[in-house]
Amino acid sequence: MTAHRGRPLATVEIDVSTRDRRILRRYADANRDHFAGAYMDDERRLRVGFTADAAAHLDRLHRLLQEPLQLFDFVPRHTLSELQALQQRITADIDALAGEGVRITATLLLEQTNQVEIDIYPLTEPSAARLYRRYGDAVVVREDEVQPTRP
Image 1: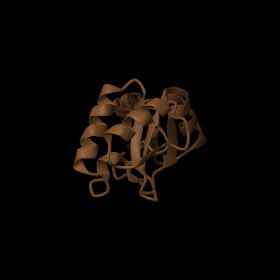
Image 2 (image 1 turned 30 degrees about the vertical axis):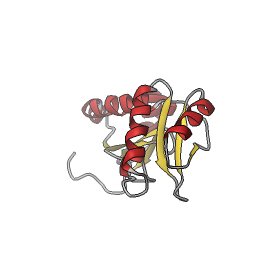
Image 3 (image 1 turned 180 degrees about the vertical axis):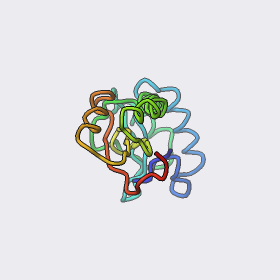
Image 4 (image 1 turned 135 degrees about the vertical axis):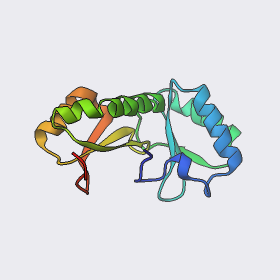
């Protein structure tokens, strides 16, 4: 599921040219070991993140893209590939966790915070602690706003 908070690059159709989106996707694919994500911030600035060599990557992208861009406001700890793999792992664990009493209702990849959000219902301290132990600091656990209709 795509994040509904913020504006990940995939949803920034109007703000970033097709050419720049294509170039950024190719650059991200070629630099999977460091690329942490991209998003449009509230002030309509394209922000990119890298886990290492951020200044060098930014310099290269400035030469390739027409769109002005800036680095994330923080140094990301996880690459986008790592977060995508984690989100897939969490999705694969949904049934097992439900058997343990943890009802995951959604997972969201949040490029803006370099995390995977796990929405559960109901949110309890034991359930959240179990998820943090299992998946580490790359996740944030929140209570879903709507109670699931199926057990």
